[in-house]
Length: 287
Ligand code: GUN
Image (cartoon, rainbow, N blue to C red):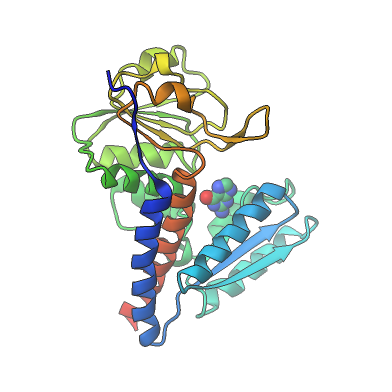
């Protein structure tokens, strides 16, 4: 049994990928196109404020143009839709991201559908989701895309492996399962109504935990040598940032594991930069 899993370092991998983004952004700028991202935040959600600040900062560090638009919590849906319409037509903006969650009076799916699919760098539009479903080119949601890059970074061959995804959200679980399937893994999606989660995870060669709950995955639920990707972002009783996985226990059993912090989190932002860059590159190709 492996006594200590190898860490998949999301910070180091991000550094490498962001260097490539910066190089490609410089090449685009030489052709007169600066990749631009608009980040839209409605309301005062503290976590969202941290996330959007990190996204804008990452853009600046990689040579991408970014604008942060902040609106009060009372903003009417129509106002937001009109703003998205303007961003869709703004040639300096190649990617539009509306930070979720939105206030309850706003229909989040309607807002997402208002974003032009060509600028949907979050990959949440039904057209992006549909493209992933049928294997066509389109923007992939950043978190599962980052998880795929982490598996790729350890040279992991998914073909014929059993991957268990815990969580079925539109943002992570469902697209994650489709990406793993596209690489010819056998995929099981587990969720809150799964009767015996442990029986499922014990069969897995790869486990992706994306629930948002502490200790969803413990060492007794993991087959020795499995690869474990932790998408969770939780605080424990001491206020420390933790994932969904009991890291200290599972690292004794797994062959590879992603830490929290320093794992999937930075990769999510990195893939947003990649998507924004590629949105701009498509515009450059069409010019
Ligand atoms: N809220 C939590 N995660 C995300 C994300 O990846 N994108 C957006 N837009 N909102 C989020």
